[in-house]
Length: 611
Ligand code: FES
Image (cartoon, rainbow, N blue to C red; front, top):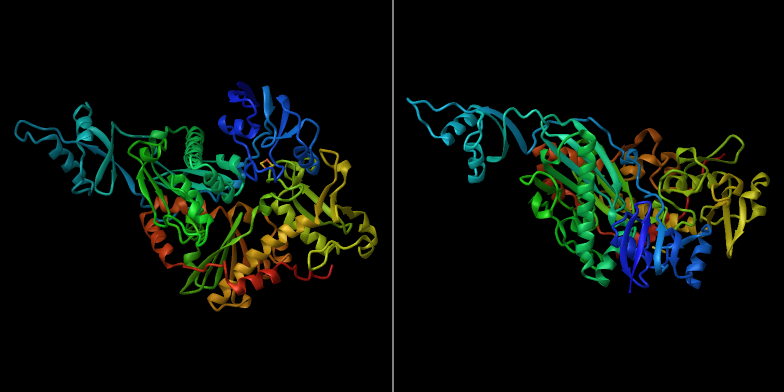
């Protein structure tokens, strides 16, 4: 029996078999939606509001809803079954605000794009010199310094029908790619694309000048198959057809991004001729429609590491049909094309002194450079910094606690995104909250929340019993939207310790490999949107990054996207990316005994400064 389900606020109605769960219906309707654990009923984050038509919640669903302190009427999309014609409301897509794309804007390098536009005037044939059209066209090209340009039969047919002698030709290498009649006044564009596991960002640039025309960011549409890459890969394991589904979701998302950037700039997508994509290894595989399953089983290798170039129609990318789609190379396994982009975009190759680059996401990619060498590793940080597996964790959207500091009254001072009543806590808030808790003496170096009686008197109300342990109260119920306190549980703190221990141990391993000590380190570069929003002081204070003076720790925003832009605009930078991927020494962490030892050690928090 088929039933109709309507998904609000998109107002999409689709037919599904009796008993289908809401998450399957949302996926079928292609509505952006985050199912952090991929629908396994573990994360409790796939909340939707039931309007009508769902089977009563099972015991298991009720338990998870209770743990999540979900409001009445909320249901778990992956658990709730459709048993009548149904209507559900999906919360507004918790996508990343465009500002979170962390763009640097108009920075320009020596611009030498792959595609160039030449305006030509084809000399007329005369009775005394009745030269062929191709002869005259080649002469006009030669006058512009373009010798031996190949002209395809199709383009020749088009040029032959043009009434004007003035044409604009688009050239790639020694190949004529396209012809436009008259003087082309529209910008010829390229798109730099950064495909993150959580968010995708696109930068539309004019190829001749490097001018950024527009930018857009959106949630990765694969989120309904899980917040992390492993959930998405395991969905292919369970059902091999999901590879095509996930590939297509990504391509549709990229095409939507293209629509957004072109709409914003008032340019037709037909004027985009080149696209350079970066992303982690798994996202590049999904983008190209290649199964990333080998990344999930030992020895965790990729199918491909090389940079790829294909014509846009081969991937169904909605730019000019003669356009090119390129990816930057992958260094190895989990050190992907986004790291190559971040190295380029952060200017790291030019630094002569020891420099550390950290891009924190679900994986922490770490690169260390000395004068002559570069090494990289990837530390599995897990999704804690994205708010997953944290009781009140949420993405960095309106109402999220994004900063916590110790205020004048020697107590927490909370800041939320857009100044709204707090709804939850995002990654930057989490790091701050833990550091502030250390400063206030609410937790010890092992991460243990101290019993009330060991806490300074005026702060005792901040420690409450929770389950078999304790929790720290960040905001009281009267301050929050849901009328419940927002707390940091012992388990939340452990999740952060696991994440920060892995990243910091990765840093220490790279330092050992290149024979460096913290004292010899000149600069730390924090890349990525998260790196832009975390407090450098708190990151240093909880031991996530080495203890360098703050003026030697810099945030550079979305360096991976910046690197893609540079490779798009400069053939030299693109060539450098190919060389870089071979030059960077990959240091695998798994199975190393010293990594395990360091991991355990680095889970501890350093002593905070006297307060
Ligand atoms: Fe439903 Fe995780 S509990 S997606």
